[in-house]
Image 1 (cartoon, rainbow over the protein chains, first blue to last red):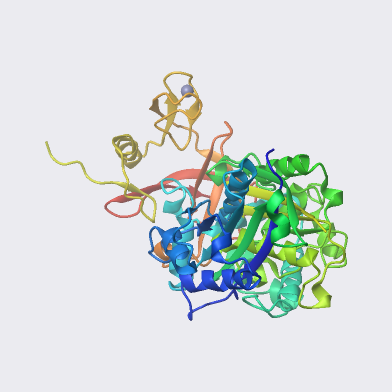
Image 2 (tube, chains in turn orange, blue):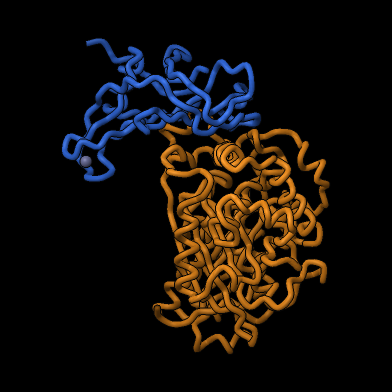
Length: 388
Length: 138
Ligand SMILES: [Zn+2]
């Protein structure tokens, strides 16, 4: 499998409606803390600088713009795109280049600027990630794809909407303690369960946010890691999966087949199983997605994800803490940044650097990131191991 | 020869129409829903594909005659994409035919909330001069 590769540093912009910034400024905010730790431009060999959708900014050749703004315009760079998995796809691409020996030290950055257009326009752009010929003509928005999964899941397993709302309540509970979060406020179960409908059965509190933000990490080859940190986080497992383009072609809507395949591959590569995971960052673009993720990743049997929710096993002191940074729901979901933000959060938790003890997970040895693109067409699962 | 009338599928419009799709749309206008069948391995597709997913051979259009389906899943879109925001709320359903083939379309005549498993009937719709579609009725 080539050389061992570790994450050695991370940076994160404030997530939110960032009318004070565009893509380039958000990227600078994400790289600055890394620079301040001493990983200056001259120490980076190459970079992957990615965003999911160019419609939002209208900017083409964006990785060149970002590289130039960050002062790495003379180093090789590229952009990787795979919808909402753009961040972890970038990390996967960079990992491959470092493991193979092409470069020793790489900057991996994900960004999205989404709020320069109206939310109706943003919804329009995201609906164009459905099949343009057969799905787009029927107005199937991004939440609509997940609502199709939710309707079927709720019918098959007989769960009430309240189970989904409990996931949103948890997300907001932790997002309220995350200074980088887009919507850092607590919500009550009643408020979440009775919010305005968006794509029934999903309501406003079942949906992640349309967010501006960026996140960055630096990865290094084993023999170079010590130059950068004595607290590395090893990349131990990488699993990638894919599913059918059209949602009607999936054999099941109560699971994402690509996520199951990605999880299995990541566990096999890391040589561990779901019981070994101390924390997970899962792709809760919608509340139903988090519930399904518990099952696809083996934390619960099919149809039993609700038990994790109802027993609060997903809280920071529970059996399997999930999204104790607020997740995509409260921290926000700048598409291309999300996978890197998950990685950043796992590094932070392993290092015991959560801002509030009330969201610090104890003794994280293995952390898992589950990043899903569109409605499951792309999935990346990463397993990280504490290296100190 | 008179110029062929432009036809498009559905409410929001994908304007990238190929000769294969134009042929399919002309059939739809005649209330004939066509599936496609691989000329090499015989695999059938609904909605149709010009190239077979299995062997990449060319497919030909053949008529799809099933009309009764069961609701596989649904969504009530309250807040739609910009191109359909005037139409919301609308109901999108995946219906499954007895053959196992599925189709995604709006249900246009619901009087009560949709339910997984409920019977659906396929029908046709002329949206305007250029836009045509298939739809579900309950
Ligand atoms: Zn064939």
